[in-house]
Length: 566
Image (tube, rainbow, N blue to C red):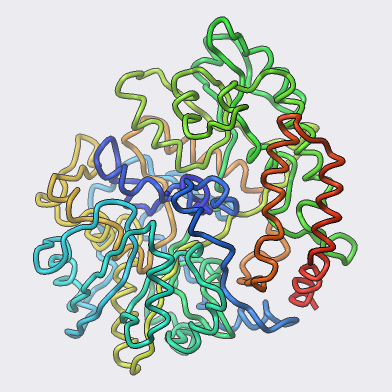
């Protein structure tokens, strides 16, 4: 899978601190790179077809209306942030903190062995080669030894994981002790299944009860909210970043051509046209439809206007984004292959200099550096500071705070408490011994360090160490990609600048599953947007589609969502 958007990313497509620290141009990049998108509210839009095809429209079920937010607030743990290692670039309003060097010494965050000898099965997905299982996997052995318990992983093909999840949930006796389910793989009416099969963790973690597990208390509240279903706290989260996507430009080529990055929507079109020179195989822009929506402040799904909910397709912002993108295409500034719908080669076009502006998930940034810097050391892509269409202050909607969850099967209190103690070890933050072990394995066996102290996977590490324990629960994300000169400063600095403009949409942090009969209502708008942008259809066709949407259940869907605001 994404980048982003996890995502949704999200993203948000977004990686854990250990992955950000440990990945460079190595085999591990390929098997983990999909995590860059998990942070995003729009992560499904940017995810490869192999994952979006199985994502469906399923989302966690919420059935109580009115006081849903208040109910959720009573279920989640109290947030008690840890700062075992002070970041070089501080978080601003939830932005990702940055570390410009690898810590010379590590902190031990869990004083005693957390487990008491229990044995548990855990089911996780993998979008890469499935690692060896116990007893052949030395990474599992090393981590389990430190845990003081045995976690036996059942790793399954991520591309077929949705079917696996539904098959397992259909037979409660087959449900493992610990089960990872990405948000896009949650089946219809999942909340009911969760309440019947999985442990409600609120009785162990709600409020100050979480103090028993300091690393879990370090996970932000918003991420925990996403794990609430049917009046209970069921999901242990894999937290995401604040912002999932950016409009990138080739800073190296802009400088070479004497061009400044755009500061408004009109300026974007002017710059794109100025840069376009077909004789030099250079176009100003890729298809930036995702970025255009963010620039224009298009809400992820619903907007409250004067006490009434508007679907994103009904909003003025959505219309404006469509009209602007159509003009960009009509200018002739978008690469012909992008116009033809060839998104698969978009990164290659941007990295080769055939296009100079593009929309991508934040996880795609360091992945591009890993690909390109070895052969083009001057390569420099940078994100634009977001702007409103008129060049003023933008409205950026916060990315979903978590897109992967794990669930503990109902068990006696002693077993649940042991698994939560194991989870507390797994959620150890950046700069700790536990974090390095979970994300990189054993030094000298699974990884070595480069001159900067960055972990580099050995052949054994590339084979054995994957996102298994990390999928069960992870700490808040940080940026520690010091292997790419200047990236930490640029990326964490960019996110900190955008953070004051980030707002939460009306249903942020609330899990709501639409009734199945509405599942395909929004799909026609995807193809329609492509047609309008490319001049094959007009805004009148949007009006017609909106009328059809309303008559086929759009207004009923609006009423359904309004029930959660009553």
